[in-house]
Image (cartoon, rainbow, N blue to C red; front, side, top):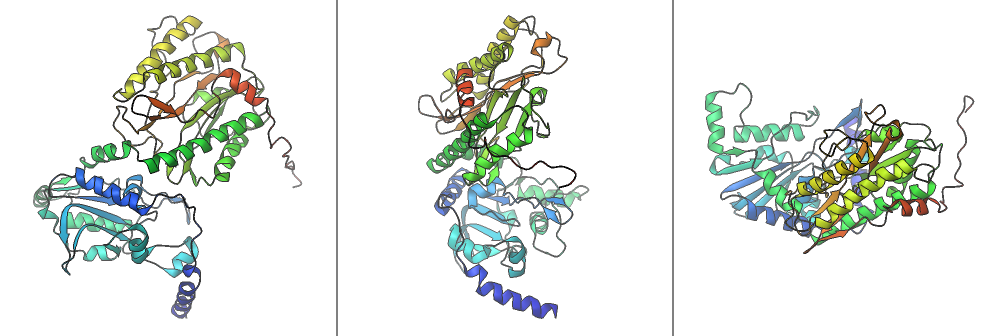
Length: 487
C-alpha cells in the first residue's frame, strides 16, 4: 500500500507542481559567471591536477528540524548550486569519458525525488543542473560511487580537509557523508591508524589539502562587476536598516525590537539571509564584541546602542556598524569617545588605496585611539597596554562576512574599516566612561587610485546622526497589544 501511494504521489507531483515555473528574482548571478569562475580556477591549478569541492553539510537544529541550508561559499562561487549532497571536480586538463567525450569539469548532485520535494522544496537534479547551471557533465550523486577515475594519475589532488562533522543520513546511500567516504576510498585518503601501505598510496596520489586556500583567496578577493553590483545592494539595504532604526528608536525599546526593525528592512528588500548573527548591544552590552543575545528588554535614555548588522543579498553580505544614543542626543563623554573612533576611521580611509597592507589600517587607527584615550585620561600614556581597542579594523566582505582575499588592498576588492572603543563597567578609569562602547564600521570598494565609500548613506557624524534621529518614523504609530496573563 505504501509503495502504491508513493508511486501515485510521485506521478502527481511530477506532472503538476514541479512542472511550474519557479518564482525567483531576476538579478541572481548567471550561470556564465560561475562557468567563468571555474575557468579562472583552472588557469591557476598546478599542472596535471584536479580540484575537488564538496557542498556544505546539512545542520541539525533540534530533533527533526534542520537549520536553513546555506551552501559552502566556494562551492556556490564555482557552481551556483544551492543544494546539499554534491561534489564538484575541476580538472586542469581535459579528461576522456567512457563514450569518448572530452571534459574538464564534472558535478554530482542530489537526484530529483518528488516525495522529498513535496516536504523540503524543489531540486534541480542532473538534467536541470545541465540546463540551468551550464554543466555538460552533471550526474545524480549515486553515480559518484561508480565514477571510475584513477586519482593516482594526477600530480596533485587538491581539496579542503574534512572536519568530521557530517551526519550520515541512514536512508540515503549517496548523501554528503557517503560522497566523502567514497572520495576517501578512491584516493586512499589516510585515516588515523592507517597502515604504512595506505599512507604511501596517499602520498603517491599527492593529496594536497593546503594549496586550494591561497588559490581561492586570490580568486574571491577580487570582485567582478556582477559581484560588486550585488554587494552595492547588500550595503544599501543594510544602510537603510540603520537609518530606519535611527528614526524609530526610543527609550523603552528592547534590543530585540531594534534587531527586528533592521531585519524587517532586509526582508522588505528581498535579502534572503543575514550575513552573520545580528549584534545589537545597548549600554555595557556593546562592550561584548560579538554580542548576539540581544535580550535586554528595555533600553534606557542614557545609553548608547551599538548595532552591527549586515544583509546577505543573493549570497553577498554587507557589514555595517553604527552606534547611536538611545535618546537621540550624545552626552559629552559619549561624543568624545565617538569622535575619537570616527577620527581613527577617517585617517585610515585617507591612506587606503591599492598596494596598502590591510594591517596598516589597524596601525593608523590604533595610534590615533591610543593617543586620544591618553588625552582623555582613560589611559595614562599612549604606550599603555589595554583592552579598550582589542581588534583589527579591516577584512574583506563578499560571499562571507570575513571573506577570502589577500590582505593587501587591490583594485576591485571590497573591505571594511571598523575601529572601536569599548569601556566596560568597573574599568580602571573614571566612572564617567564606564559602559561606553562605540564601533563605526563602513564598507569600501578599492578603485584604481583610492577607495569608494559604499556605505555613506547611513549617517556617521554625531551631528548627522542626531539630525536623522529627529526625523519621523513610519513605525511611530505601530503599537501591538500588550501580552499579559489572560492572553
